[in-house]
Structures are given as structure tokens and as C-alpha cells.
Length: 53
Image (cartoon, rainbow, N blue to C red; front, top):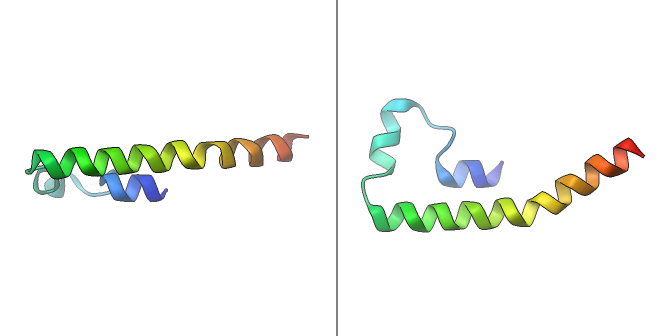
């Protein structure tokens, strides 16, 4: 969820254009959100596996 907030995935359509005007800032936010997603994925998978077993 934090990665989604940092990438701007939860904003309305009229604000998306304002968030992505600077290419350097866009790439930096995309890199950070991808790193957070990859970091959190094993935690989510382990919770799902523990709930299923």
C-alpha cells in the first residue's frame, strides 16, 4: 500500500498529469515504489501461506 501511495496510484485522473510533469521525479518515485513493493512482497506471501496452512 505504501508503494502505491508513493507512486501516486491512488490519485484522481486530474491530478495524475500534475504528478508526472518532471521525468526525473517520476523515475525516482517509480524506483522507490518498486523497491518497496519488492521488499513487502515476501511478507505478504508469508502471511498468505501461514493463513492457508
